[in-house]
Image 1 (cartoon, rainbow, N blue to C red):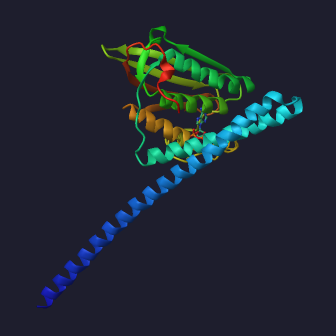
Image 2 (cartoon, protein in one colour):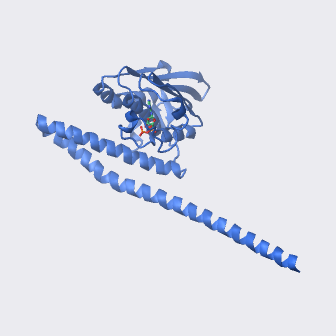
Image 3 (spheres, rainbow, N blue to C red):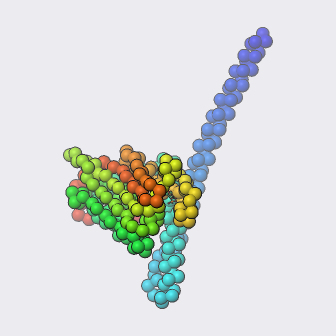
Amino acid sequence: RISKIKYEQQEEGLKREKEAIILKKKQTEETAKMRQEFLSAMSHEIRTPLNAVTSIISMLKERADEDDQKLLISLQFSSKNLMRIINDILDFSKLDSDKMKLEMYAVNFVELINNIRDTYLGMALEKGIELNVHIDNKLNKFYQLDDTKLFQILGNLVSNAIKYTNDGAVDIDIKLISSKNDTDKVSFRVKDTGVGIAKKEQSRLFDSFYIPSTITTRNNGGTGLGLAIVKKIVELYGSSVTLKSEKGKGSIFRFDLVIEKAAEVIKVDQKRTD
Ligand code: ADP
């Protein structure tokens, strides 16, 4: 009889433990959902007025005298930086909740890469660094690509490469490594002659919010989300990023993507307005 009571007590205890675990799991999921919704809503709320601020700065810059122009350039730099941080947070909240998906459009590949080069050329020139793009001529055609996300991957890698390089060059190499009927396998490499990354930091670099505690990187005001976003998007393409780096010598980030060929389209920019 005593053992029966003990057994029943044990059963009751186990049942309660199970219920507590289920409740905890539910609460964790709800908290994660609320956090994601909050981040997403906040980022949108901040982005709208910030867009207005940046476009007003651009307008003012055109009619300002030389002294005011310098102030406005500095203001523009700060607001662009703020926008980048907001975008990182927004992307991160999406990838955290597995909401990030690829959206494919027919895109001229070389045009996309030229856009990336044009966007970051000024940043490189300001630091007196060369930004070289070597792209296989065979890639001058249309592909089914999520161009916004490919821009994000390369943009993050290239802007990091420029940020963490004080002299020398940043090289973007894009090669066709194999071709099948409907797809091409393309290799991307972003190489810099910058500060490099210590061996012990390399494996954690792709973790969200991870920033090595060196003076150089702490001073750059990043979020530590850029590479986590890069990793996630490359994974969406079914691939992975590799890093080779030596402290003081520079870094090489590499990834391969299998991309689908697209029929040539006349006007690429008709696709969307965002
Ligand atoms: P963020 O640049 O916003 O801090 P990232 O995730 O893009 O975040 O990068 C994380 C860290 O990795 C950076 O703070 C920097 O220390 C290091 N890092 C990234 N790219 C490079 C690079 N090309 N050379 C040296 N360090 C780099």
